[in-house]
Length: 219
Image 1 (cartoon, rainbow, N blue to C red):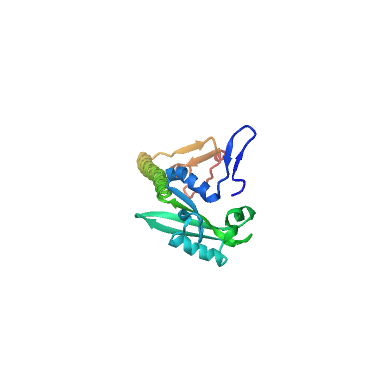
Image 2: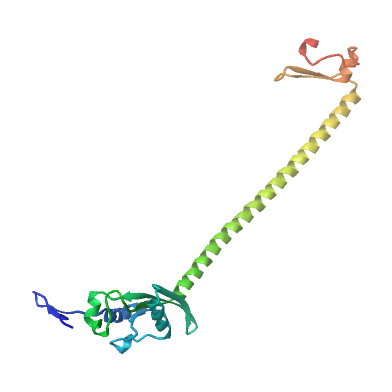
């Protein structure tokens, strides 16, 4: 290729690399994360760029007008994502592939990547498990709070019922004692300025029919 090798003004030697070679060099780093990428062509200049069955089908689809393809596959029992996008020829591509009859804008191949999905699925499972633990903890706290609140309400209701029963019993004893003593009783509520006159009190003063009110002026 004309102009492939150049020397800079400070003496550095540079070599122009085609896209396929650059992708192969990147595979050394991508392999650390189980990611593989490559460029393929139906009539490759380098046999290493010859497409496999899936890639060949993708190239045919590109020639029919499809821009990209993706598919989930299983490899060695593990899930992988395969993705490929069409490559169209530009002026720089024709420097190497022009003699093959390609013209600007024509499909010259595809660039694809294969990504292992297991690390992503493992991370997803871990996140789901963390969320399950978190919400499970919240759920348990809620149950404990509901249980504690229910017991407190039940205890309060029981204590209130016992107090009301004791009050009723005390009032009954008081009424029996008052009737047994045959005394007339009265009670003055200073807050409301009302006076209670017992039936026996009213009877003693001749108001057995209940014709007396609750005002202090009734005296």
